[in-house]
Amino acid sequence: MASILDYETVALIDEDDAIEIIDQTLLPGTTKMIRLHTGQEIWDAIYLLQVRGAPAIGVTAGFGLYLLMKHSNAGTYDEFMNELQEKSDYLNSSRPTAVNLSWALNRMKQHVVEFCNGQFDKEKVIVEMRAESERIKAEDIDVCRRIGENGLTLIKDGYGILTHCNAGQLATCKYGTATAPMYLAHEKGMNIKVYCDETRPLLQGARLTAYELHSAGIDTTLLCDNMSASLMKSGAINAIFVGCDRVAANGDAANKIGTSVVATVAKRYNIPFYVCAPTSTIDISTPTGEDINIEQRKPEEVTEMWYKERMAPEGIKVYNPAFDVTDNELITGIVTEYGVLHAPYDVAIKDLFERKSAVTAD
Ligand code: MRU
Image 1: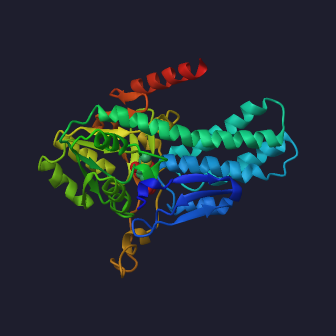
Image 2: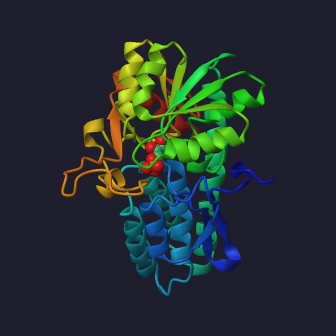
C-alpha cells in the first residue's frame, strides 16, 4: 500500500498545463491530489495552506510563474517582462513570511533576464523558464538531503528529538529540512524517538509531521504544544530540530508560531536547539527578526476550526499570528546544506554567502 511519502508534494504536469499537489488541508484522513491551472488557483492553494512549508511554496511559485507565462501574448521583450513582473507580484502576495516564495520568483525573473541578454525569442524563453523551475525542485531535494547529512552529525543513537510544526517531506520535495536528519538516522538503523508538537491552530505537527514520521516507521509521539516544557524537564529530549520560514542576516529565525516558546524553554533546560535552513531561506536583505513581516490569520482558525461547535465566546478578540521569531541567542546552530553555522550568526551568515557566491562565480 502506498504511504504518504510515496506521493510527490509538488509536481509539474506538462500535458495538463498544471501543478499537482497533495491537498494538505485534508491530511491525514484523505489523500487527495489536486491540479492547479490558473493564477487564482495557485494563489488560493498557497494562501489556504493546501501547499505549505517554505521550500514547497517556493517550488510551487516557480512552476506557477512558468505556467502563467507559457501562453503569454507578449510580442516584445518589454511586454513580456512587464507581464512577468505583474504575475510574479500577484503570486508573491499570497503569503508574506516564507522568503522562499519571493526567492523563487526572483530567481525565475533573473534567469529570464540573463537568458535573453538583449535578445527575445519567446518560445526559447518559455523552455528556459520550465527548465529553471524544475531545477529549483531538483535542488530542493539535493539541499534537503545535505541538510540531513549535516544534521545527522548532531544526533546520537538513542536520542529523543522534539520538533514543532511540519518541516518534513510535505513542506519540501523530499526528506524535509528538520526531519531530514531524522529520516537519515532511521535509515542508518539508529534508535531515535521523535516527539511532535501538535502545533495549534492548524495542527501541522499532528496532521502532517506525526503522520509522515509514523508512516516511515519512526518511533513517533504526539503532544499538545503546552506539554513540551514538562517533556523537556523530564529529560526525554536531547535535541530540538525545527524548520524556518526566513532567517534574518543576524540569525533571528521566523518559524511557526510557538517555536520561540520551545527555544526559550530549551535554553532553560540546556537542550540544544537547531534551526534547519536551506540558504534559500536565509534573507540577507532582512537585517533582524524585527524586520520580518509576520502573517496574521483569521480568528476562526482559533475559535472554530476542528471543533464541532464554536469554542470561544462570540465577539471575542483573537490573536493569531502564523509565525514568531526566535532570537538568535536561543539558537545553538543553523543547519544549512553547506554545514552547521554557529554564533556570531551575522559573521557566519555573511561568510557563508561570500563563499557561496565565490563557488557560483567559478
Ligand atoms: O504555515 P506553514 O504550515 O506554511 O508553516 C510552515 C513552517 O513554519 C515550517 O516550519 C517552515 O516553513 C519550514 S518548512 C521546511
